[in-house]
Length: 418
Image (tube, rainbow, N blue to C red; front, side, top):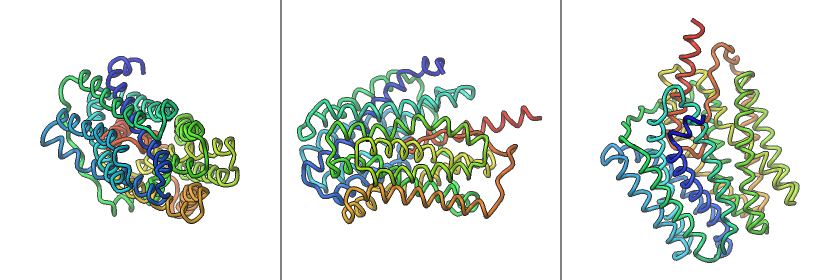
């Protein structure tokens, strides 16, 4: 771990600053939208724009990189991000914010593809798993730290929009100064959704449902906090708790997944997350909301890795990387619809609709996992691959790198058994 950190610390620092900027702008818009008098549904449209742009960027960025190179793409998209962040308070209107969110989602996706390519190129077969773990930790640290920055300025002013713009601009320096040769870029041809669903229906349905649950957390938590009457400090702590739970639960659940039927674990984890959402609806207190956020964040985020690992149990090693494209697409579709559905429910039912939507998705996933257990037997323990750690906020290159690591782990295990 320390060897990876020593060789890639500058790159990881740049990625952390990117995550701080991204995490702050999402929470800040949710708070500022309430100050500007935007309706809940208007804010849901604004928030869904990021995920629409991110999905489009994940598909367009590879071709852009092949045409003009990593450095040009990284610099161009980063410049757009900084510009849009500055323009948000100058054009405080739902339409302009939605356009800005689409642009920022597209650009962040392309920036992640570029930075992850450099990180993956810097890793070796022996330390790729550790590099991925560090990348996950850096992502979470960045998002959690971003919530603290909400307290350093007035959300109704300009300074909190300047801070993420500056952080994103600064993040380019350690990344561009630390990389040497431009890494080769060769994306795998994605597997068809029909074939992917035939291989693992639970994983396909699960990542779609989780896309909605994650985007509700990432995009609508600050909107919920504003509607529920929380102070800026309470909103900051509330949002950070989602990601603290995700960070603490990821590896214990990964350890369990390698030792029991993953469908049972998926069902249990989804049920616990659903119970957390019920707590959020029932207990409208600061402590109750923090418990709910910790359970929902701690359960829903690791579920993504569990579902990917479960799909890998039924995939040949040569098909794992190609399956990543379909998984990302399904998750992206769910993420686009998540804020829209949450905003509509909150418009009808008020702030509790935030928890209701997340709870429904998690309970639906638990029910579908229970149903799938009646359709076929669990794979033999000797055929189960290692837990594949990856976050829903990661880009497609990190996803494919995680699949490559899973392939290498499976091949190493086969060679040891022979």
